[in-house]
Image 1: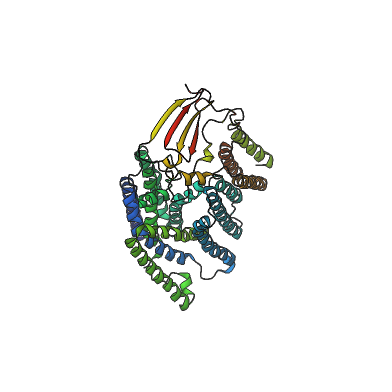
Image 2 (image 1 turned 120 degrees about the horizontal axis):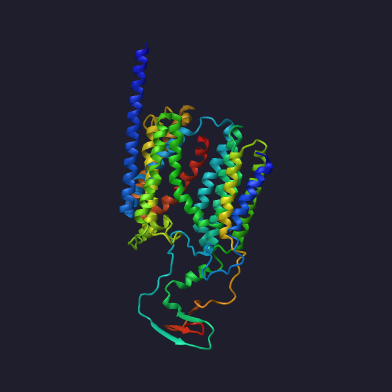
Length: 340
Length: 181
């Protein structure tokens, strides 16, 4: 009896060890490859990664959020209502900023105020959600919540462009936090390995910055290169060369895509994305199940349209995509707070 | 940790944070303060493009002029008109931005104080320290950006030059004044 238990334990340890090695090797390969390509040919790598993964990662993320949505909201009703009102409102407001600026012929100062107002709304919305989450459990004490929120609001007004750029660079890292929580929930033995792999991120960023600190700006003067450089903060961080900025942003974006397209489905789904057995909302009724499948199907169609758009007019499609993509950036906040 | 100890900790941190950046006795250097760095909305060109054609250039000395001056015809600065227009009344110098940031920082400090008061009763040295450090870092950063106490120089220094963009003419004229070496 005891011999078989020892044998079973040994076999389990071997399996965990193999999984951990496979996980670490894959993570190192993806991160190292992304760093190499982002540093070597940043613009081409940015174009390729956005083309290949922008649509699929949103689709898989939507599928993941379906899994995380409870079948019945119960006492979380007001939390999810605030979340579901905030996401489309803030997305629409962000999409409307260029129109507002054009309509009222705003100068840079006006733009800065619009951005600061939007950033303030975002901070207060997230803080309100966190406050609701905090009140759910007496043990969940976040005393720093409001001082931190007001400090962030102050920064948003003092440095609106920099603050927005911070969101652009921090958003890819949120995926790493999601993965950490999910691994902790489902396969805790893998968590130390994952956290060890996370050390690769600052290490590779350091290598990237060390190698690219003194290089010239990106050579291309075409609209697409300027668009990609501006997205990475080229017009805000004037003292930093655009090669380094685009490389850094593309590297982080690739990590983000890798997590959503590969790691999260492997860790959390446990089935094909279209199999709804483990989705709580789908278990509610057949109508819900069909509705969720319809949403997934619609998402797949949008993904195909996005690919078509990229092939037809990459620059315009990229612009539209990153405006609409604010939706998924914002949708992550309430679900991330639910994991804390 | 008691409320008194937390208050002393916070007070020391703020004192250290603000005193190192109190520069009221120094004149502002002849560069724009960091928060007035020109910025552009996303996806707009950052700088005006200068013309690549050769232009006439004239240098003359005027002993009656106090400072040196360079006069540039506007048409030689392609895109300068829109940039000049955009920068007027813009940037971080807008009072509304400073006012709202100030209000938010005040709220952060008040909220931080309330937190310290609350957790002071529960002896959470770790949390109180974290809040104090966070508030100190924000205060340090904000104080390094706030230059309301800096004196602006009344007279231009020796290295200064007045740049004037004119609508007419096609020659760039550099007039060396009395301050020029």
